[in-house]
Length: 402
Ligand code: ATP
Image 1 (cartoon, rainbow, N blue to C red):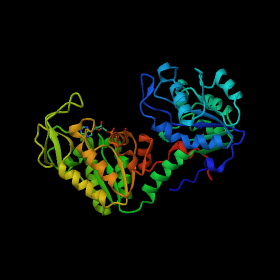
Image 2: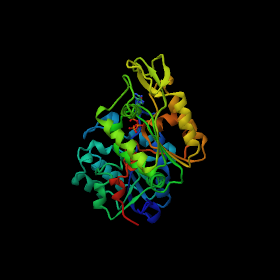
Image 3: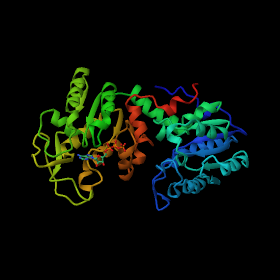
Image 4: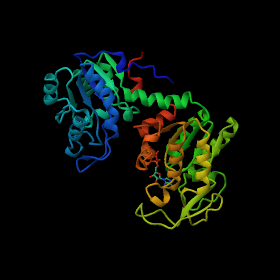
């Protein structure tokens, strides 16, 4: 699925007001940004628009202020950090209404090449309802709209979808384009063998991802909490492990589907077990490794086992494209992170195109220091999942076609 959307390379914004929807939804602790990946990822588009001589008006949501101003969710710290990263002032247009008198005055005062940042778009209750009035207010600030917020592309809100109805030109930014090129090529046009690795907590969260990827990939690897529902579907005792009982039939269907399509589906052959879930999550716990068909009734599976980690790493070795979403175990606990580390390491060591589908797996890969060894780490967990499900993202669909 090549991206057939106009991008910032197809327009000339000299002297024009450009509203750019970014994804500045960064984690904050005591007013400090603890992970600035999303800010760094937004820079190429912003720099391009500055160098073209546009008046660059940035906007984003941050957290869930639920439609009212919440000082702890103000984007002010983002403006300060962005100024440093850009080496140019990013003026913060503080305004409880987002597009109120202050913001309008700040836009009026802009010169070509200036950058301002609006307040958190979710200070307005209409934002997440895609309301008309706020969409029009946002559009009234600008001549051109650029959507570079992949992290919210799976939602239709005022600041990424509604606004496009009221501006003449809507295009995508470089980050959006990169996300879609990587994820799109991997799923629709992969260099084979294509290995997809799915983990995380529950089967129910990833029903359509499992089904869609099974059609596209050569090998589907299952780990994490979701593996135990598959093992139970095979008739194994899974003890007190996480199980989606209503999804057992679904897992059987998927195993049948894999067989019919001639695809390889790998499930854990052994598993790391403990007497209970660690509490607190990083507590020292006693674990042992048993065969997947030998989990005692009173024990809980919390990570893939050592043989499984080797099996999965071998599958990655022979792949040319790898997509990974979801940890292999309770990676927040160092004792239960071994499976996730082994898989991350195998991805780091291969020459294959490696794509991390955001969320926990992205956090794990970065935490482990393998971030720069991956071909692409998606900035959007939910959006990348919907993409892997084969869905069209409303935030992308709303941009002008080429
Ligand atoms: P996101 O939805 O943010 O993209 P993700 O898809 O990477 O995240 P989730 O489905 O949210 O992953 O699941 C991650 C969680 O699953 C982690 O907190 C991890 O501790 C938990 N988990 C992994 N394996 C197990 C297991 N065997 N038992 C219980 N929980 C598990």
